[in-house]
Length: 103
Image (cartoon, rainbow, N blue to C red; front, side, top):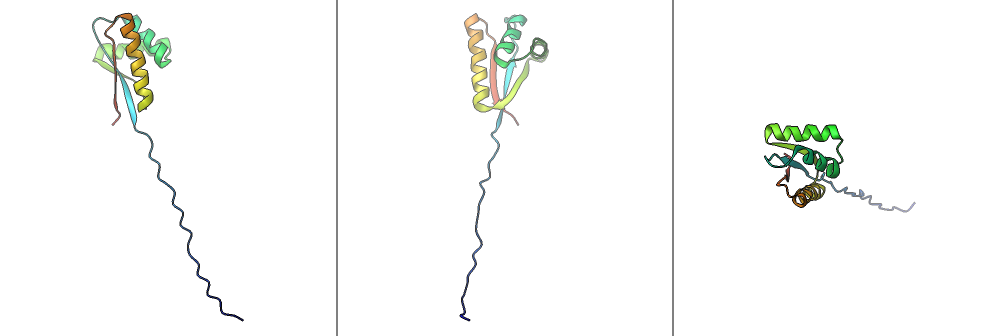
């Protein structure tokens, strides 16, 4: 029987480690000029909130100075924030939405 040297090499498979995308908060800032009803309408239109949820978020911002509206990926957060700010600007109100990384 012939002597065959068989060398077995382990098959190296590397699976890339995928990191979850960092999340960002969209924050509603309270001001003394924008009517509460308008804020609720913006929250309903841009963030697809119900009347009740929009009212609760608006009241939280009214009482505490700011409120987190939604937490999502950076590009979505920036788009929603810009859309809401644009609606307020078109209506002539100083309503402000900002984004910041979630800790």
